[in-house]
Length: 291
Image (cartoon, rainbow, N blue to C red; front, side, top):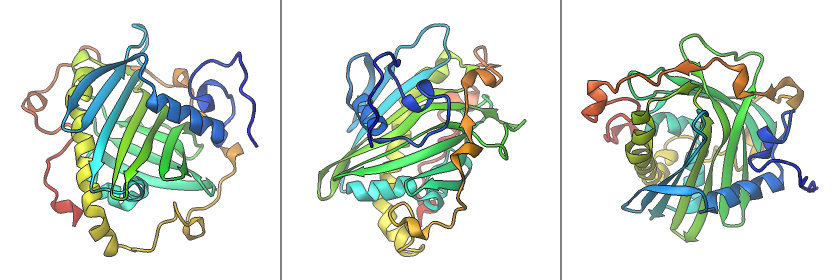
């Protein structure tokens, strides 16, 4: 049942900004996320090349909040294949060279779970991690996957990583034909630190486009890979297949950004390796790991 929107509620992702308790997103939340993905007002185009576009949104100078939106045209990739790739955690470990560690923790409903993800940041920044409540919804021929940060009692912040906060992050996959689609990635994240300008610029000009292209390559190779790795195991489509333990929402709490330590990395210089276009989370373009 839909809940009426309160006119006094601030604009933005309701799970964090409009609620003090953890809740699984409802239809209104999914519609709000879709509208944000499709919005043009307030976004500045920073990259547009070879079917990939990147926008950033101006934020207040005293805020560390970073908002980025990427869109990619995917020829020869059906929407349902891209949806599978984003869900398949075992396959992500193969193609996502940013990942340090990722795993599902528990299921909340048939279309929501809680998971852990840690990733490499451009050197010499400290690496980050998040605990998120993720939910998903097929909408006709389109799909949405989105998440926001929560606190889980068994997974407190680690000393070797900076706990970031996902205020609203997700994907909108829109079918454009039997074998083509468009994906929009929207991220509103507090990295818990004052990042140097070169990181923000590099994210929009280089890292985000490269990550989208790597995702596309992974999608092209996924059907062949999946045939060799539990081809019928897709718990995101068939909830009865899920091996995850159930978890009550009352076990979780909203992860407010101001409750975490801020790390000031604004004066950190880009490493020589980064300037040369080397590592720093993106890895190589070698696709041998996808077999």
